Image 1: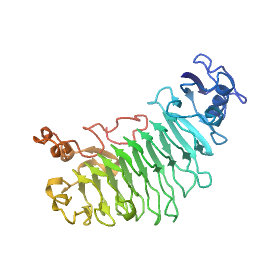
Image 2 (image 1 turned 45 degrees about the horizontal axis):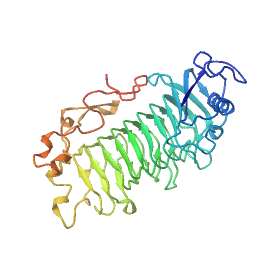
Image 3 (image 1 turned 135 degrees about the horizontal axis):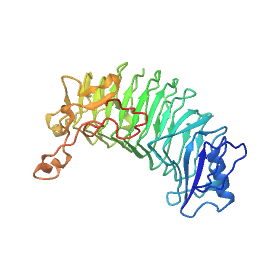
Length: 388
């Protein structure tokens, strides 16, 4: 795998440099596209993949980013293309020029350390349309240029890690399949901050994370929607997330009848919802709902989540430790300070208790997204978490 270097502060209409750290490529606009062309025309795509490192400046697109020239149909998990900032704690601004990035059907393209803004859909495509084995890490998605569709559409084994979605003011119309921030058939959604002031009408505001592992995320919502925040959830697992609703009450995790499939909802915190955890047609094959805490919800666990023929799996039972609290367990969520109070520390459900005679040592995990009291484990430049 070879490293190539670019500098967005270099002004050049046609492009300059050799791609080394001492003489990085520079171009006023479409610098990443220029770098892909230079790699393909020179040494060619590396057999083990390549990395483009952005040293400084701002990236500006005037046309849709198209990595086809580099991938040539051969991108894969074993042959990745990385595009990343030299320091992920100091994000590089990327003005997408009211365009989008489509790398479908290629595989193994990864981004890290950017603040994407001025992006839009292309017809019925998300601004970021991926296929398999893609990663977006330590990035911010700031704003939304046009309404209706979604943000990120992925397929198998994609990962969204340590990112933030802010100023997300989309109106997603009335189509039932629109409104997703992240839509993936499986993958990892870990340690992110999602903020939305979208007005989603009757379509529902959904992450569409079928079979995905959704863990350690903070969701701050002031939307108007009726069908739920996270739907559909076929096979998905939600653990140690914080869900805060500061506007019109709605269900949070909603499983429609055709998506009720085995998944885990454990050790999450919910505040300000109607049914925080709701099934439209009973428990069916929902695997486990345990260790969740909530405040100011009409119901923490929906009435339908009762095992009809086995009371041991009535998730309202005290054993499962799904508890409604008398006051908020967050420091100041209305002002985006999501640090947990003591009621969430070490208060989760110890899943080891089901498998070991001594109850797994009696150690319970924290509830909610923030481990300990660190309000900002990443993206300190923008501090989307609030707190000190």
